Structures are given as structure tokens and as C-alpha cells.
Image 1 (tube, rainbow, N blue to C red):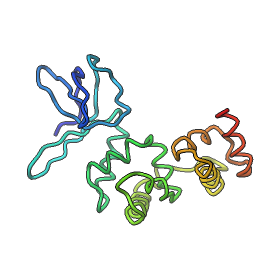
Image 2: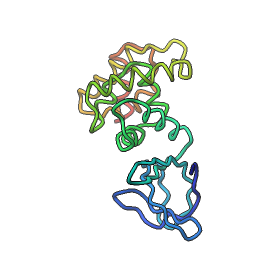
Image 3: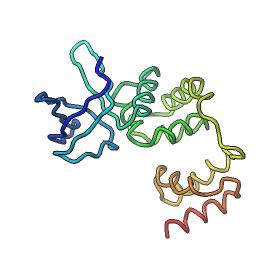
Image 4: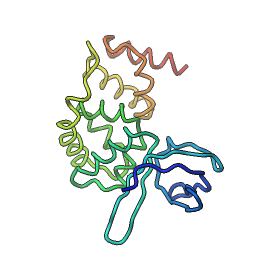
Amino acid sequence: MISRLRGTVVARTAAGIVLDVNGVGYLVAATPRISTPVGGEATIEIHLHVREDALQLYGFASTEERELFELLLGVSGIGPKVALAIVSGSTPAELKRAIVRDDTARFEAIPGIGRKIAQRVVMELKEKLGPLVESAPGESVGTALLARDALVELGWSMVDAERALATVDEALPVEEQVRAALRQAA
């Protein structure tokens, strides 16, 4: 099993990056967090996906990304391309938080995922991640989601709204959280 590759990035294509390892070029479908420029050296965490007709490499910037990808593959209806899209859209911490909070909207925003798949992801992974991811002391899950949804209604992307709210005190009322996020953006 291939777990990690280190080599020189020789090309970036629509299908991923080409990593030269001792003269062998590996095509790796990778998350955008692997930002090594062409000509630079990269160490990439790898998942080898074996199909009847192909061996495909999926690359990640961290072991945590790869582990989350592998958990997603265990969810019925999630293949490697959709799992890669999920892991590519957010940090592992943001995705784990969304799962623990039953935030299906986070997953529905990803192309290729409908309501039923999003609910299945949350339901199946919450059991596996629940003990591993705990809310911060005093964290109010409801107000955080309401504040994020308010920013999305104002035209923000879900990811931008969550990043802006990450530095805002979640004990504040929803309106104050939204104001604080808007002040940060100004």
C-alpha cells in the first residue's frame, strides 16, 4: 500500500498534480492545500484507491485530511471523487465540527451531494467522530449556525462565513456575532 510520496511537482493538470519520484511520474488527484509550485519538492499523504480497471492515487496535505477522506469512503453513496471534493472544500477541523453539529447544509453546498447523502454523512460519521471532536466549553452550537446562515443570506460563501465567525465569541447573541464578522470584513 502506498501511504506517502515525496518528490518534485513537475506538472499541474485538471486531473491533479504529477509528482516525479526518482524518475517515475505519479498522477495524484490532490486537495488544493497542496500548493507546492511546479519544480518544488512536496511530501504528499497518499490514499491508493483500487478499482477493477484502475489504480488511482489521491493526495493530501496532512494525515488528518487522508483519514477523513478514508472515513468518507466508508459512507454509502460516497466515492473517491466526492470524498475528495468534501475534503478539499474545508479543513478537517471545520468538517468534523459540521458533522458533530449535524450541519447537513455544509455538505449540501458541495456539488454532487444532495440532502440524503449529506444526512447520511452526518449520521454515519457522527458516531465515529463524536468522542473525538468535542465542542469548546460554553460553545453554543445553535447560535453559531444561525450566525453563519445569516451571513450566507447576506451573500457570503459558507466557508467565508465560518472562517469569519471562527474568531468571534460564540457566547454573543446571533446579531452581535454577525456584526462582528461584518466589521472584520470591512
